[in-house]
Image (cartoon, rainbow, N blue to C red; front, side, top):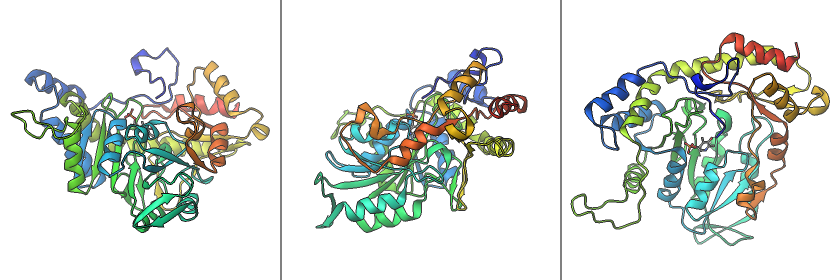
Length: 393
Ligand SMILES: *Cc1c(COP(=O)(O)O)cnc(C)c1O
């Protein structure tokens, strides 16, 4: 997503936004792959990584994929999203889930963020489904496009969970699939339940700037055995006869390799510690920045435990005396990397013409938000430099 400097490659004194933290058994496990020749998509680390991830989020099944985007694509397919269906998806998100909807030849309907925690506005989602769609013959159809609405795809943006219960109720009422994009929220909890394990299917990412990484990697997690085995089938070229190579469907080459999974197993061993560190980093930002006029700090809902993936503030131009992009440039000059939130997807030239449901909050958040350095390895003296620059101390 952003330029993720490898720690060794970063210029001296440079504080990156988010870089991998590699100091566990990564070398040992990867070496085991190289020494034994088990480097490709077969091998014990893939199975172990799937077991570890499923165990961590508390699902019965997990299917490793080459990245989070491919896992989202497969999640949509196995959830029953068909060509020309519609999927209600957060507008303010990294673009991957929206692209995945299009890979499935379905259409996104963009949903706004709520102003308190910056997640999908589930009240607006309810309004859209109840008022703008029609329930007929066991199907929900968009009144404007006449297309079938097949799924809701909430994104737990920045690691804070979406308010899932109202979405679960809507999905039950209208027979929609509920797919969680938990790629940014591994380790976060919604009402004590790990994100990814709340909906029908959850998707994780192990990209380089996520909480843990395999370089590139992803995972689909679910309690539904049928969905899991279908996903496993589709990610391995839909092979129906492994001897004669008979394929009854078009599949994908989306399986993670054993080398990457080996790294993932080592990273999983560190995950609990990393989340504790990230929470501490967030608390330190909270304490130091709470008195700065014109900044709105991230809040955590009473029912939520964030994983604090990227600590993000809102900058009020008038009260802070500088807008978010001005602050970004000033920090960049001080060798501190920050980043705005993504262009809301309903404004993306890549997805022009798709329906958006009153996404004004997403647009304001995009103007005002800035994510601060949040690497697990961020040292206290580095964080103090960030704080001093922002507080103009
Ligand atoms: C990182 C991310 C993904 C998946 O990204 P990959 O690089 O394909 O693993 C998907 N959705 C969101 C919101 C993300 O931030």
